[in-house]
Image (cartoon, rainbow, N blue to C red; front, side, top):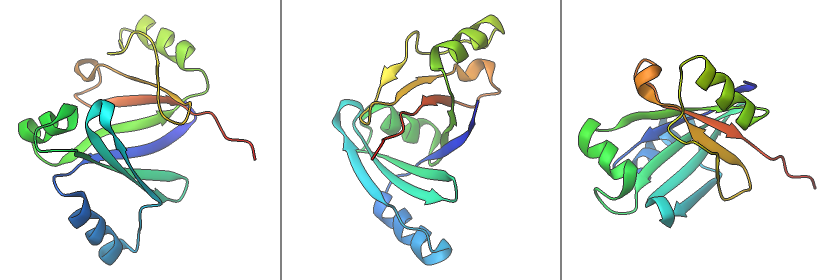
Length: 137
């Protein structure tokens, strides 16, 4: 584990929450992206070396974020942990009886790979393991 990469928060109205973050904390999203495959919109808000990710469904009740909001309401959805080698991390977790929900890492838009731990084994906290490929300019 390298560091906490982000804290993801499920919200019903991303624009209202973005306004609150700007007015209250002086924080602004550097990008907002729609991920149709998971029916979610994500706003990325940098805070030092970490980020806050605001997650909202593309339509009410849609996808895992919509289901989360219907079942639990707004709040922390998961904590993203940056890892060096995702397969090795997943193996180590499995060996220590902390299984992942994903059996193989999933590639995301920027070429990074993610896998989620099973929250039943982590005090009901969903962790995202994130192997991020740094872009070279």
